[in-house]
Image (tube, rainbow, N blue to C red):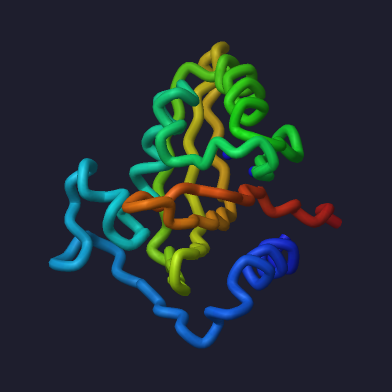
Length: 174
């Protein structure tokens, strides 16, 4: 769960020969081209519904429920709010499990600003996320986050090969 120039550089490195074929997909809800069913979801283009589905999986507080959305290659990098960086799904799942164990509940809402761009077998999205958590002591916290997922099509499935999740740093109050 986790900098714009870095994500852009990664995308540009992955898609140099396809840049002219970018197809923006901005639908915020399932439509004729984007069925809502989970079983079909990974075969259709990534969209806001898939973004919400991924975040709902994380909200179960069990990384195993999110695992099916991620590429398991050991060199994949995932940036989260804390800690800073995970390399590979195994490290991400292990670290996330430790962080998630400090919560009683969690709920993500993908913002209406969610956008996905598709260029061949690569897609990247941007969205703000509204996160509500309740920790083990019962303390509720609300956080606004930024999320940039990068997918690669593997067969008929779109898998996350990189993501960046961050919280804006509040400037010091005068």
